[in-house]
Amino acid sequence: MLERRAKDEGRIRLHSRFPSRYLSTPRDVVVYLPPGYDSGSERYPVLYLQDGQNLFDPATAYLGQDRQADMTADRLILSGAIEP
Image (cartoon, rainbow, N blue to C red; front, side, top):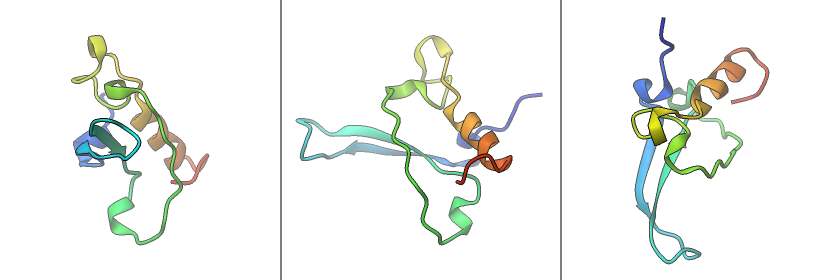
């Protein structure tokens, strides 16, 4: 059985052409949101992963192999091993 992915639940957000004063051109930024993010008002810690398209979605990953960062984070959060 396939696991439900964060992208299937709308918890992967794309910010197209995000501007930065530190870069010469705007870049796409992909953001993973933990389970329950939209229903709460608390603040969350941030983890930055700089790996382009290979983090969350096999449809956009090189050779169809993503790093499954969303699935790993979801499992750790839901098991209580880490905070969202």
